Amino acid sequence: MTPTSLTDGACSILNTAAPEEKVALSHRVAALWRAGTLDILGTMRPPERPARPARPELMSPRDMPRRRHAGSDGNRIALLHAIAHIELNAIDLAWDLIARFGASDLPRDFFDDWVEVADQEAKHHAMVSARLNELGAAYGDFPAHDGLWEAAQATAHDLLARLAVVPLVLEARGLDVTPDMIARLERGGDHASVAVLQVIYDEEIGHVAAGRRWFEWECARRDAEPVSTWRDLVARYYGGSPKPPFNVAARNAAGIDPAFYAS
Ligand SMILES: [Fe+2]
Ligand SMILES: [Fe+2]
Image (cartoon, rainbow, N blue to C red; front, top):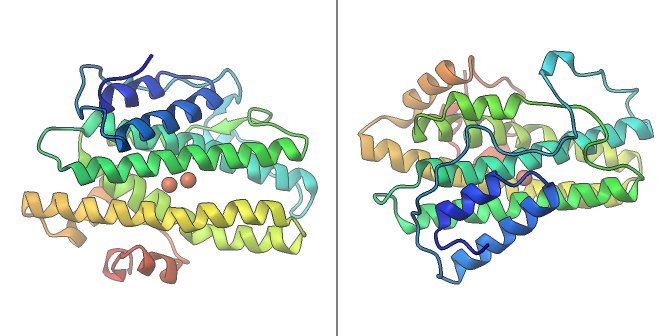
């Protein structure tokens, strides 16, 4: 099936359960978009929840088994598995943003940015999955939690709320915690996993930057003040404010003014 529009392509990806197919179709739709062969808007609506494989089993965050002792092989595999799961969610979150909020009054740049994000998330999931395979494991081997899609559902009614929570809280949080993960893997001598996480880290700065750019663009369109608007939306739809420590250098690189997250 070749989509004729970007939003129909996005919906087809959301309706695809197998991770390898979700990745392949993401790269294909991104290439078609860049080649200029797709209309923006089609006729399909995104599903309430994306299709997912039978495994991993999805649990509520509080039922998740505890990680094994830090530094053990099992712990390293559990960490990579958790990242693979986050990246699979991230593919769907990017396409859901396009499919759900795509509208004729958004500039082409908006779609260029989120297609780029989706394409990179697909690469991230594939890289981490391949690394799991090298370590004798596979995505699906462990249970995973469903917290990320809860954030998507809570913000499904409003582009500004979605941008406030997904890129500017959750992906920004990834920037805060990844350097420590990289350092732990480095200490354990796992240079191949370090290389994978470094690619992810560098590209995630761009995802947070895209979130910031379009959040501010949408605020300007609504004549809303960005910092207080962000704080209100995060309190309402995330249920609190992000907690330190913050990776100020990475957040600065993404163009997030410390006024957003300073207490
Ligand atoms: Fe990612
Ligand atoms: Fe991302």
